[in-house]
Image 1 (cartoon, one colour):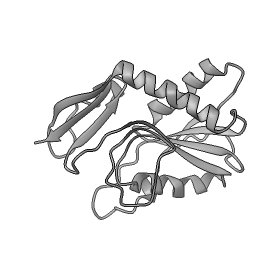
Image 2 (cartoon, one colour):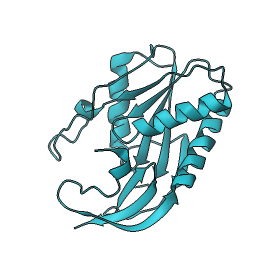
Image 3 (cartoon, one colour):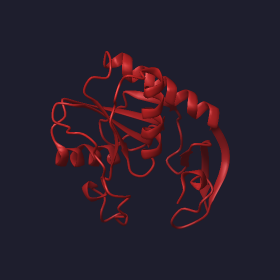
Image 4 (cartoon, rainbow, N blue to C red):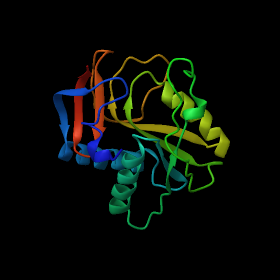
Length: 188
């Protein structure tokens, strides 16, 4: 499914109905630019920084972060890749395992500062799986987390380092992030 149609495509088990738009395309662009600046500041530059988007929702955001960083620091060469953590999830019995895509880690992670990127942080279980999956590619010096939306409801002690928007939601609501914006909706 293309990222541009993510907000309107029906999810498994029903049709997604948009109730409200929370962030526009310009808001997403500004959030990504702000997060790029924060990554540079927090790490006192970009030496050893690798950006890794989580399949599927985080990959386009990671690419946009890489582009924003290249605009801010044109001489920096920050590798941008993707990670599929599907087989490291702990909820095999609760939902089907659907691999997002092949992981593409563009640099050695031993001693690197990895910035994991995802669209929405909800329970923290996807991030936990991603941390485990990263071990297949080396031992980073540190791992940081960047998300466009932090909606709360954490089940694990995971906290993002960089957030586009904190968005308190009900557990039964669905939050969709695309380049066109962030929408909240329901299934029917």
